[in-house]
Amino acid sequence: MPLDIQLSEVIDKEELIKKEVAKLTRTFKSLSTGTKSSITNLINEAAFMSVSLSELRKIINEKGYTEIYQNGENQKGVKKSAEVDIYNSLIKHYMAIMKQLLELLPKSEVAVAENIIQRFGEGREDV
Image 1 (tube, rainbow, N blue to C red):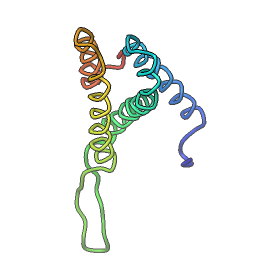
Image 2: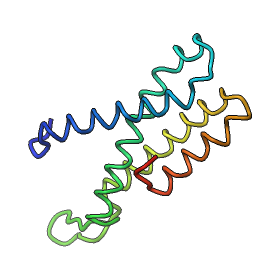
Image 3: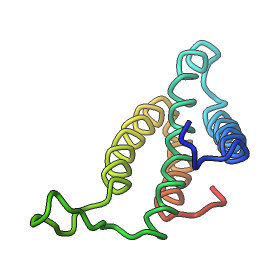
């Protein structure tokens, strides 16, 4: 654990992940018991990614999209921040998992679930 992360932050993140797992579990409650048990890992990963993406979004909003770098004495400039790279990678994986999960839902429930994903994409915290 990095030194700048407080134990309370880790506990808070775990609590947010639990809430996200509960929310996703409710979304997919209509699936058969066998299907639900087979997607538990996907739901857990999606919840972790959702919370992590929110954290990264806050960091990016505070620090910006770019950072100054210096390689040696004469080479310096501006590059995309590490958080932006991580965010871009994580959002692709998150969307892939959510697509997999949505494909399991009956057509009548897909619109509701897609609305949840859209609100997440808009950065709403109440999702």
